[in-house]
Image 1 (cartoon, rainbow, N blue to C red):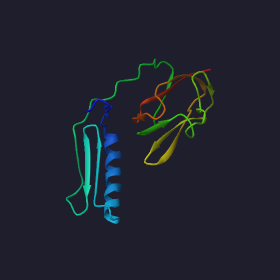
Image 2 (cartoon, helix red, strand yellow):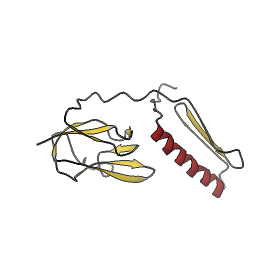
Image 3 (cartoon, rainbow, N blue to C red):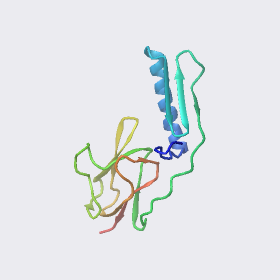
Length: 152
């Protein structure tokens, strides 16, 4: 791993997403004039070549991400799926919520993007956002803590 690469823990959910994306890329090679696609992410490497053998994905899994350092006391709202966490509806827009904000049931707190689909993260109970556990643009795992909300 080079010094500028971050560990990318491989979980069953991430592998499933990666496999789906590999199939999409294989279809792209099949239906266009593209002859070869090669992608690398940390120790993972994916190569697809027109007319070649079936898609292979190689690489060693990396250790799991460490748990968030923030206190998890209170009600934890977790990532609904693997994807990229966004705190705002678009770049430059204010975040949906900040620590200290009061939230109501059903209120949008963030977005998790997976395979170009935007999935809302909504409050499942009312309270005050005490902690935001992840940063904007971070890849999150299914079930990873995103927010801690205290009852108000």
